[in-house]
Length: 447
Image 1 (cartoon, rainbow, N blue to C red):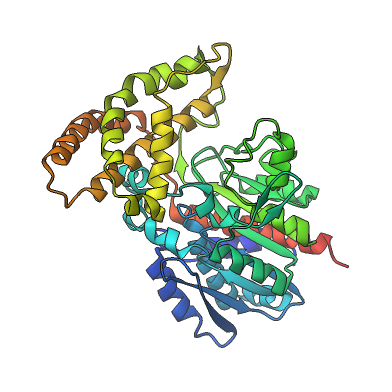
Image 2: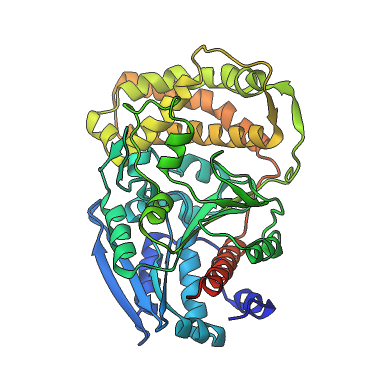
């Protein structure tokens, strides 16, 4: 199929919802769409939170492709993108051509438990404060995409999650020629990872930068070991790459992470693995990249953490120590523990590198990430103790509330001008990225 304005026009015509789909809405949409005679619905038990994972099979093509959404618990737009893809496939002429060319395996939500944990901000989107307060991903062992088995000379991981097991089974059962893992970055522009690269991918990517999104910036890679193919286009990576690049800096005894889906697929299959990152937030300061006129240590620690976080750190510490063990050990509790651990470490004395400078992007990302940790920790602790009547807990909560009010006001000032990208813009961009890279990879790798 020729990549042309025709495809973008069809994507642009799709009628899309204003908010990302929550898990119940995804399930309801799947029930409706799966009644189509060409769609085969399959339902797998996830093994966590008594949730199930529905996945769909449709199309008659020789090449099998696999798309999945909710790769991380707080990245819901992939589910909406797959539902938009279904609309395109089942109700347009160009969709008929795609159905004839490919057999499609579609998993709108690969992490249903994570979707439920993030339901509060998803259903209230685009409420900025709610997003920062109730966005949860948590530690690596709860992340479906980072729980693939790995065995190296110095490190092993075999605590495979049930949802990860399902992805593995789909990989091995269908041996897809193309996989699209649909992600959302925080704010610094769109970017992608691909296991195979051709020049047409650069042209297609560049044609989509700023087409629907307010953000016109190109995002930077998250891991130094990745090769840069073109601005915004990077090579996929797995834990073997990360460990090999930083083997002396990693404490293997404390590492609790598996291989990535990218790494596992590359080790076992010959197809193209593609991962898209489209930003949720638009920061009008980007794509500006000037350096702050402050050393790294002062900008990151003294200016933000040392003066502000210390106001609430002790209350957080006291209340967290009172949280029941069972509440700390469920998935939300582990997520909060992850957040609070990083918050408290930020108040500890450590050496600062006063010679290192921060770019505006680094500083803004750090600022937003820190607010997320702080606000989510606050909201989570409040939720755990909301029904408690202990005098001491009520007192500590009141002190925490009092100190947080100023920080919440500061949050609104610091995020002034920051806006959510439109759901329709995110979905259209992810859909166009996936279909374009899929076509290029398939056409260039024909036997």
